[in-house]
Picture: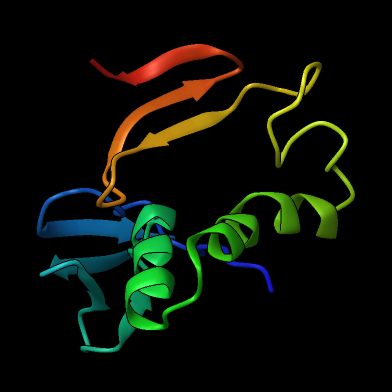
Length: 115
């Protein structure tokens, strides 16, 4: 199984008005809707998807982690470069605490978020 997010540009931003391909999008309580009330797109982040599949669906953490790391990389044939931690691979990493909260993010080995 592969977990991905098709989240839109307003993902992670506060409630408010945004634009999606020229259409007004209103985000309220992390739900994005067009002016007519229909859903505009997802605001789900992968850390929240991981929490959902572990805590709600009860998939073991190790399996869920593979669903958002190695499995997607394998599906698009880039697992030799990303998707797991090995010498020589691109060091894109997210550090989570015990409650699966993001504590730090590294892109190509450089910290871009966290203390």
